[in-house]
Structure formats: C-alpha cells, structure tokens
Length: 167
Ligand code: SF4
Ligand code: SF4
Image (cartoon, rainbow, N blue to C red):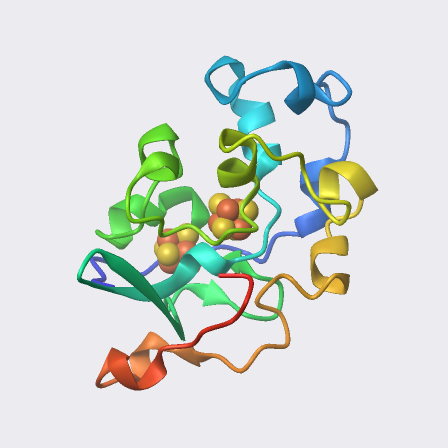
C-alpha cells in the first residue's frame, strides 16, 4: 500500500470503544445498515483486522495474502494511524455500503458489516454480544497470533496467498 506521510498515533485500547455506550441495545437487529448512525456503525466492526491484509484480484476472484498493511499492529489488530489513515495510505478503503457490497467480495466472510448486509446475525463472539473487545481474539477469528508478514517485507504477493477458512 502506498504511503504519503508518517505520523504514528499513541496506542489505543480496543476495549475503550465499548465503554459508555449510548446506543440502543441490539440496535443491529432492528436497524438496517443504512439507518445506523456513526457510533453504531463504528461499533459493528469486530476488530478482526482482516480487511488490512493485502489482496490480489485475478479473474474476478479475490485472493487474500497474509501480508498486512505496514500500519497494522498485529499485537492488538488496530491501525496505528486510524485517525488519518486515508491521508497516508491511498488505497486504504473506507468501510461503507459500497465497499461492503462490492463484487468480488473483498471483506472476510466473518466481517460484521458483510454478515448483516447478507441477512446473517452477529456471531456469538462479536464484541457487541460479549461486551469484550478481546472475544474476537479468543474465538480465533482475528489476525492475532496468525503467521503474518508486513507488506514492507514482500516482493511478490503471489508468494503470500493464504486460504484460511474465515476469509
Ligand atoms: S473485516 Fe470487517 S469486522 Fe474485521 S476489522 Fe475489517 S471492517 Fe472490522
Ligand atoms: S491504513 Fe490502517 S486501516 Fe488502512 S489498511 Fe492500513 S492498517 Fe488497515
């Protein structure tokens, strides 16, 4: 991913997103994605980090690699430059309705936005169900503890294609 300028933010706590919530309980069950406000929308992200993997597209199919964006922190699965990520990384994608509905699908099949938009409920390990940001790690569906490389070490992405079941 191309880099414009570098300004690393102080590490955030993944759990801080779930403190002092002012959203309706189980809002995702009675609101469509179109109806959600910004806070609700942000809370839907389970923090898996899998959208920060580099991907290849070939013959209308997406191939995920285990090479993550250079600004991804594999220890907490958070972006190191979240507040200004679009200014720094030109191909960092905003997760909006267009991105969620894009074909071929490039978000992982566990992504909460993709699940809700396709008629599924949130999985039992989702932090909005458990109240714990760490439940996505404990369920083994995030990038934490997976064999990853930073894109800075990659010469040919084809050498890094993975076929993990949850992508
Ligand atoms: S794949 Fe979806 S749920 Fe996972 S970090 Fe990205 S936007 Fe959030
Ligand atoms: S800039 Fe941040 S959010 Fe965007 S791909 Fe990189 S790590 Fe992920």
